Image (cartoon, rainbow, N blue to C red; front, side):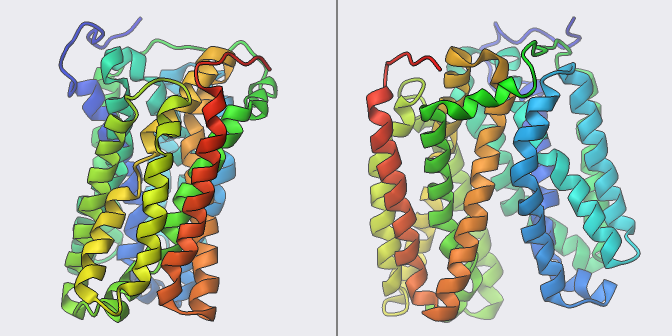
Length: 404
């Protein structure tokens, strides 16, 4: 039985269980992103190059993407609360190892530990939705859990960077560890302990991937994420070299962009309220089309710097608009046609987005090396147009029951 107060009848959204799950994603996001802010400090402290430390970012995504669906499918076969605590314990151990890593090799092992469990922790957090909030707040809950990562990039990373500059880079991870312990205490205190153990076989859960709606939803997220990360990977050079933001104001520019991304995540919840199943994502074809046009105009940034600066803010506001709608698609399709795959479905957004990050960053690197920063936006627009195509292909599935 649950030890947490019943929230199904509670009209308030920001209850302690909901706040706990948002705080959990904040800590996950801070741990993932803080490396970027303290990269030079880690390189100096461990006496390795900045490029070597930078490889930790791509390594994290490389591990995160394939392991997340596997871990989520496996976790569905065990009691949710115990699994949640076990995985966040592994997450804490990984961050403690980061804080005390004597060399780069140990730091790599620690980051792999964190990547192995982070995606599954997000998926498990999503499965609490019917237990901690009422149905009308479902999309709002999804949006806010995802927003924990945006809040981490806007607030957590700058704070972690400041702590690293004042006390040393290891203290940034100590801060993450303190926050994680606080989240664990909240989990023990307020989250429900009921479980929804899957009775279907481990392999059978992956039949979810044979559903055309799921395939198109995953492709839309991959393309949507790639469209932004083609240029976002080089956001600082774009601000510095194309828009001519003075060096001392680059950090402020990053915070402003992060605030735009936070708005994007929160507004995504409102967009996801327009229907159920595939319908909300279908409605976003016009959003992806507008994004493509805006990305093409990024080529004008060096000619009209003021326009470029304003455009980056708008692009940040577009960056995550599809997150909640795609999550609704995954969860509703699974509930309708693949009820034994709910944990796996909850992990697909994280998996798809990280694949998009890897693809977009790789393409951005090739374009930047071959053609320069000016062409990053137009190439990102190609991915946005592919996302338009996938959402159009989803339209025939609205209000249809499909058996697989």
